[in-house]
Amino acid sequence: MTATDATHGAGKAAGTPRWLFLSMAIVFGLFYAYDAWEGVGNLVGLNVAAQSLDTTLSGFGWGLLIAGVLLPVAVFALVIRLGRARAVGVQALLLLVGLCLVAALSTDIFMFGLGSLIV
Image: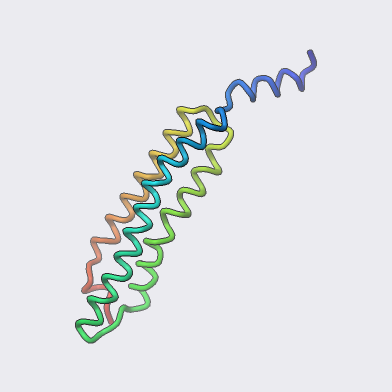
Protein backbone atom coordinates (compact mmCIF):
# COMPACT_ATOMS: atom_id res chain seq x y z
CA MET A 1 0.00 0.00 0.00
CA THR A 2 1.40 3.40 -1.00
CA ALA A 3 1.14 6.69 0.86
CA THR A 4 -1.50 7.97 -1.56
CA ASP A 5 -3.65 4.87 -1.00
CA ALA A 6 -3.45 5.44 2.75
CA THR A 7 -4.46 9.08 2.47
CA HIS A 8 -7.34 8.33 0.09
CA GLY A 9 -8.53 5.53 2.39
CA ALA A 10 -8.38 7.81 5.43
CA GLY A 11 -10.34 10.51 3.62
CA LYS A 12 -12.98 8.04 2.51
CA ALA A 13 -13.47 6.65 6.02
CA ALA A 14 -14.06 10.13 7.47
CA GLY A 15 -16.45 11.10 4.67
CA THR A 16 -20.22 10.92 4.83
CA PRO A 17 -22.30 8.72 2.55
CA ARG A 18 -23.90 10.84 -0.16
CA TRP A 19 -27.46 9.87 0.74
CA LEU A 20 -26.95 10.90 4.37
CA PHE A 21 -25.41 14.23 3.39
CA LEU A 22 -28.28 14.92 0.99
CA SER A 23 -30.85 13.95 3.60
CA MET A 24 -29.36 16.31 6.17
CA ALA A 25 -29.05 19.06 3.57
CA ILE A 26 -32.70 18.69 2.56
CA VAL A 27 -34.01 18.66 6.14
CA PHE A 28 -31.95 21.66 7.20
CA GLY A 29 -32.56 23.29 3.81
CA LEU A 30 -36.27 23.39 4.58
CA PHE A 31 -35.56 25.46 7.69
CA TYR A 32 -33.30 27.79 5.72
CA ALA A 33 -35.99 28.07 3.01
CA TYR A 34 -38.55 28.96 5.68
CA ASP A 35 -36.27 31.77 6.87
CA ALA A 36 -35.87 33.02 3.30
CA TRP A 37 -39.67 32.88 2.86
CA GLU A 38 -40.05 34.91 6.06
CA GLY A 39 -37.71 37.46 4.54
CA VAL A 40 -39.89 37.67 1.42
CA GLY A 41 -42.95 38.10 3.64
CA ASN A 42 -41.25 40.92 5.54
CA LEU A 43 -40.19 42.59 2.31
CA VAL A 44 -43.69 42.51 0.87
CA GLY A 45 -45.52 43.19 4.14
CA LEU A 46 -43.42 46.15 5.22
CA ASN A 47 -43.57 47.63 1.73
CA VAL A 48 -47.38 47.41 1.81
CA ALA A 49 -47.42 48.88 5.34
CA ALA A 50 -45.23 51.78 4.22
CA GLN A 51 -47.47 52.42 1.20
CA SER A 52 -50.55 52.46 3.43
CA LEU A 53 -48.85 55.29 5.33
CA ASP A 54 -48.30 57.14 2.02
CA THR A 55 -44.54 56.75 2.18
CA THR A 56 -41.90 54.36 0.86
CA LEU A 57 -39.09 52.31 2.28
CA SER A 58 -35.72 54.03 2.53
CA GLY A 59 -32.64 52.73 0.75
CA PHE A 60 -31.45 51.34 4.06
CA GLY A 61 -34.81 49.62 4.51
CA TRP A 62 -34.70 48.04 1.07
CA GLY A 63 -31.12 46.87 1.62
CA LEU A 64 -31.91 45.42 5.02
CA LEU A 65 -35.01 43.59 3.83
CA ILE A 66 -33.28 42.21 0.73
CA ALA A 67 -30.43 41.05 2.95
CA GLY A 68 -33.05 39.26 5.06
CA VAL A 69 -34.08 37.30 1.96
CA LEU A 70 -30.58 36.56 0.67
CA LEU A 71 -28.88 35.83 3.99
CA PRO A 72 -30.38 32.36 4.58
CA VAL A 73 -29.55 31.31 1.03
CA ALA A 74 -25.96 32.55 1.31
CA VAL A 75 -25.35 30.99 4.72
CA PHE A 76 -26.83 27.65 3.57
CA ALA A 77 -24.60 27.62 0.48
CA LEU A 78 -21.55 28.47 2.59
CA VAL A 79 -22.31 25.79 5.18
CA ILE A 80 -22.89 23.15 2.51
CA ARG A 81 -19.59 24.12 0.88
CA LEU A 82 -17.68 24.00 4.18
CA GLY A 83 -19.23 20.75 5.35
CA ARG A 84 -18.88 18.67 2.19
CA ALA A 85 -15.74 16.77 3.15
CA ARG A 86 -16.39 16.51 6.87
CA ALA A 87 -17.80 13.84 9.17
CA VAL A 88 -21.55 13.50 9.73
CA GLY A 89 -21.55 15.13 13.16
CA VAL A 90 -19.52 18.09 11.97
CA GLN A 91 -21.83 18.57 8.99
CA ALA A 92 -24.91 18.52 11.21
CA LEU A 93 -23.27 20.92 13.65
CA LEU A 94 -22.29 23.32 10.86
CA LEU A 95 -25.84 23.28 9.49
CA LEU A 96 -27.25 23.93 12.97
CA VAL A 97 -24.80 26.74 13.73
CA GLY A 98 -25.58 28.35 10.37
CA LEU A 99 -29.29 28.13 11.12
CA CYS A 100 -28.73 29.75 14.52
CA LEU A 101 -26.72 32.52 12.85
CA VAL A 102 -29.52 33.17 10.35
CA ALA A 103 -32.10 33.22 13.16
CA ALA A 104 -30.03 35.67 15.22
CA LEU A 105 -29.48 38.01 12.28
CA SER A 106 -33.16 37.81 11.29
CA THR A 107 -34.10 38.77 14.84
CA ASP A 108 -31.75 41.75 14.61
CA ILE A 109 -33.46 42.82 11.40
CA PHE A 110 -36.85 42.70 13.15
CA MET A 111 -35.54 44.98 15.90
CA PHE A 112 -35.30 47.90 13.45
CA GLY A 113 -39.07 48.08 13.00
CA LEU A 114 -41.01 49.90 10.30
CA GLY A 115 -40.25 53.35 11.72
CA SER A 116 -36.55 53.16 10.93
CA LEU A 117 -37.06 51.62 7.48
CA ILE A 118 -39.32 54.28 5.94
CA VAL A 119 -38.33 57.61 4.42
